Image 1 (cartoon, rainbow, N blue to C red):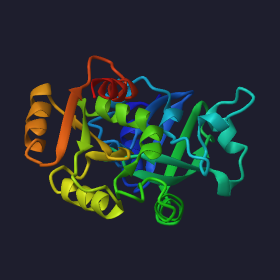
Image 2: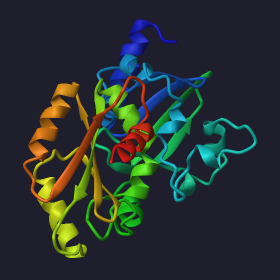
Image 3: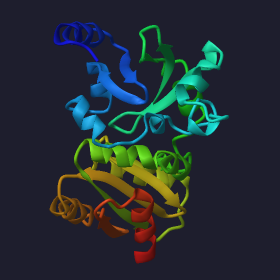
Length: 260
């Protein structure tokens, strides 16, 4: 693609950008900048390419944004995006901390056989209004992540596990309060529980008095340590499991439900 001098120059220029910059040759990612690597917590382009996933899969399937289900007539995602008005060229992607961010997209194809795609973070004006103000990702009753939001980002979470060379652990939490549960008690539980977990761990309000905690670990032994720590919480029953080789998060959650 580039000789060594040109490659070094291009990399230096795009690394100065605060926006995410990705260079494609055809559908293949051939260069990423530091901002992109930080966003997905990548060590290198090579570690990104290990996933083998189509790039378009990074786009969260939300009705307010462009994503693969909006592509028609066998177009590539580049072509489908370029057919949109500039104001509609917006995608949502989830970072390595599982936070949804919004980006306007610019596709420059002036260099033969290459596409230089720039993702400008416009989260404050879009995600805040659509995802946060409308509480699309938070369950109002409990203050934990909503089940619907969690189901939307399953694949992104799986990709994060691959990128970070971690395994997924999940724990079903069944509340056994003596008194009838109400919004106040659910909110109180969520607030107290979050003090015991990491910021990047996902606590999901699953159903009535059930929650699911999903998190990444290096080994199954680490997951067992977390489970033992959680068992110190009173009025709760815990059912824990960890990811088997190449198992999807959807399968993990299904297995948890069958264990309960």
